[in-house]
Amino acid sequence: MYHPPVVNPLHRYRTTAPVLIPALARKPSLTSALGSAHSIPAAPTPPQAAVKPVPTKRKLKQQCETAKDKVPHDIRQRYVNMFTEEFLKTTTNVNDAFEKALAEEKTVYNRSVNKLKYLSIAVNALKRLKNQSAVTAKDENEVNSQRFKGNIPLNLKKLKGNADDMALYDSLKDYILTEERLIESNYPVQHPEKPGSAILFEDNKKSNTDPLKRICCRCGATYSVSQTGKHTRKEECNYHYGKGVRSKVPGGVETRYSCCEAVMGAPGCQVFKLHVHDSLSLDGFLSTVPRHPSDTSCPGVYSLDCEMCYTIHGLELSRVTLVNSSLQVVYDTFVTPEHEVIDYNTRFSGISEEDVRGNHTSLREVQETLMSFISADTILIGHGLETDLCALKLLHRSVVDTSVVFPHRLGPPHKLTLNNLTAEYLRRIIQESGGSSWKTTTTIQVSLLFIYPVCFKPYYTSESKPKFK
Image (tube, helix red, strand yellow):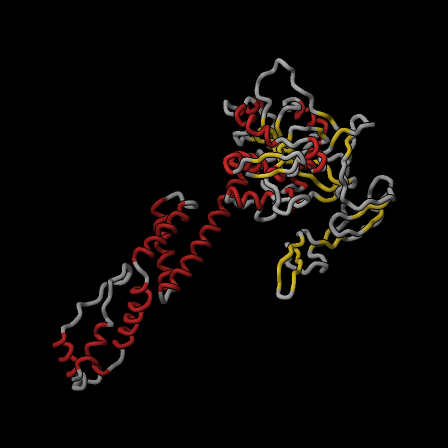
């Protein structure tokens, strides 16, 4: 009559013998169990009545019920393999990586009380290891490339290209901006009355009739300058570097800054010592010239990216990088601005004062280098190249703009950022820390154009607006 109460606890001691804990003893039979049950009240000696063995059995019982019984061996083995892969990125010895992976998995296992807890702790541990390996790899890449950063002269061998360049050039002809689209996108064009000068047909910035007044492009404040362009007094700039992001909330829509999540209109989260403005000089421009009719070689396809800094006269070129269709850097150099620098805009340009110290490359030298291999027929790929060409003071018509090829769903003047395009089409995250890599942008632009003809077949209407089949 009392068999079930005695037998049921014995079933709870069954185990599958996990890897890190030895298997339990064989389950006693029903007869021996009954015998031991009847013998328990008759225990005569006090040492046998001690409760020391009971906690040990209870701990073993609890572990078997929770972590060991409920975390399958294949799950544990899978995480050991993943831990090993991450340790191999930072460890040269395979055995050391395997030992570290086993120790990491054992730590996760010991901290777990059930399968769900094990998975949660294991995922966090794997994420931590991935971040550590990514930081280590990034540091190694920076050390290896620091010597060549902004110091790659024009490589004539890489200008020759390969056999597929002509096919790529022909396929990209359909994406070259028309004259109407160049004007609509505010690209610099030749001034009709001033040789060597450019004109912009659209200027959405606030105009200022006073030549000694400037409007800060960060906080919107108006400040005074001298005849040479220097600030007449030091005044701190309190601003937000992020853009306003609209989101739906209960009862309506609100706009918050992407940099600090503050509500639109809140005081700035960043402070700089002076105000800056982003005016561009439209004098000193050069136009690319057509090739000789007898030249039947490929005109060339290059991806272009420029970095600018804030000077007393506005934005000026501080770095230029070109990459060919094989994703090889053709030309990369820092440029010495013509006027006094106020801010290198390191957060977005990745350039600091130490990078350009000792560099004496002028804008005129950069123009001469580019004109030596870029003709009017050369295709330049870029994301919003109008500002880059203004900084280079270069008039060029054969342009493929990824911000136009991949239009925003709301249409102009809205544009998708290069970060969004890369994440959507290439499944890559770039400029995660706010600074840009020295050739990230240019290589991404080429990669986007490589995959685009496979994904879409665009055609242009008479209104020069892109449509998609």
